[in-house]
Length: 631
Image 1 (cartoon, rainbow, N blue to C red):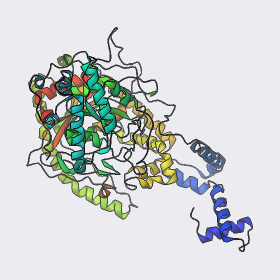
Image 2: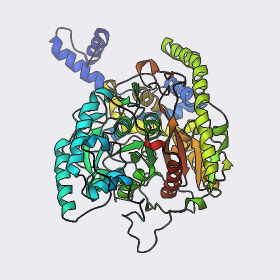
Image 3: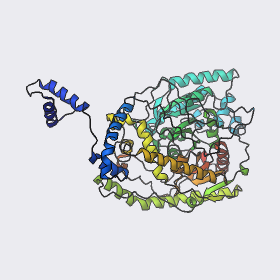
Image 4: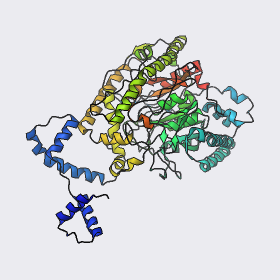
């Protein structure tokens, strides 16, 4: 408690205490008096708040408002006194399905927990297993699963190999928060016993994986990547962890995420890109992207609210599946934004993502947003019957996000960030123009595949304004950090980082939140009309349509896959600029010999069909077979 001398004397005087009273006792009484003193909202405060909200209020209207506003203040305190945990959702549940549409029911009698068909046994299964198992580190889930099924390699041997790699490369890449070594070794030994006894659970049985450290795992800390949470233990297994346990997969590590799912900086440093360790791995599924790319896990689980699977998959050259909102239960995972959070796999191939998705989809009876939809991978699905759209404008021109206008009352830090951002725009545009040749090359591949692309454009809505939904929900999820000052423990507390955004969000009117959700509904209905004409939309991952922001609002699924490597002639990596960038909120990407990506968007709950077409493209190009060379 901090109380200056003037306020101390005023408080004493108001209580009638003489200055001869024991100073320590007086100070305590004065501090308690100030702490409990009711703060009245005044007409001048209404003027200031009205200016922030952009609502005109006439002078004669203020008096009638004051008693209600002061009563509401008491209500806020009553709600905050409930000390609601991060895991408690609001009673309003977001549903991305437009009116009159529901997920397609599964065929009667179908065993939904098994793929209809997986790809033929890979060639590696017929060859001799290398003496050095590190030579298997970059194999796909399908390849490793077949080796384990045929008992050509044991789960224990794979687990020990991946744990050793995690230990070896973590000092360079900073992707491990906690090794779950004891749990993993016990699981691997049990997997080998079961397989030897003929109780094979499926393609994931015995395969080591890593989970983003917002997934709870019993007996291990769950840090959310944030200062102040380093020793947090949530004594349960997240539902996704339970389901992968049931599939026989082996959890070897809890992997880094940016602080409270923002960026790639966490309390242990910055997670790095294996293709260029001078770069961050992007965020916030930074650890899963980096560890998978570096061949340190067979697969991983990440999460996305607005780009957190897409970014690391692109930066690290791996394949990510962001499922339809409501397809995978989030029970036991940190909440950032209830109506936006999604969990999904990060792997080396599209089929890998589909095989992992096969194990984790579906309602759990606890996450109310999780729908009764179904997912079933079928390698033999005839993707040629799908209607393929493409975002024509995004393929035709390079584009850079314009710098936000500078406010008249901008601080010196904001002015400096603005100048850096404007100065970087020409170089960023040159880099995007260089990358466009990979997008155009993809169009040529589609032609060779016999695909007739249908040009589409996103419906025009204020999607950027809808991002207030994320800010408001995340500010509510972590309000107690803002109120008690613990947000100062986070990596970054200014600029565009969470602490500053959450303070701003407390001035975001509830009415505007409702309007943003209504606008979101309009966008959902407009997208439903687009998906009446196409089944899949292909797009550059970054472009003028801002598809990452848009489709996270509408809840549509996305598959992000590698689409080649930049050559040695590529423009140098450009550091992100903007408010807070100087403090490391965003790390540079791009540059010579780093990956580029392509994104496939699907209709709601048509994730399997979207994967089928993305898989066909991946088989035609083979870019997923490239991997970084680590010393």
